[in-house]
Length: 66
Image (cartoon, rainbow, N blue to C red; front, side):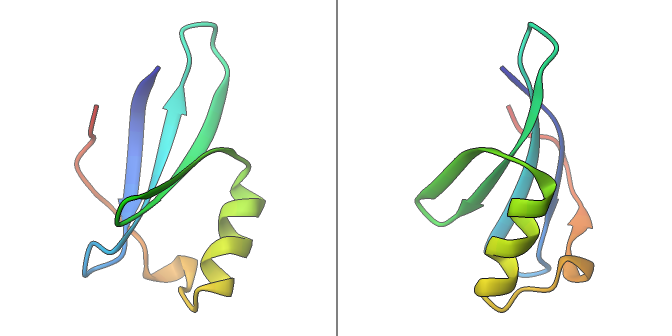
């Protein structure tokens, strides 16, 4: 697995990573503190962020990790 892109909130508390498996499959990972949720669709990422009171428009591209 390799992180091929990432976005986060200005304070860095919420991070969304685009993960690619060597088979070519892609999914999203949501990171908040020690909590990591893998294998998400972008729709599910948006839902989880909205439930936490985070607007996806607040995310900005950041340096890749991993």
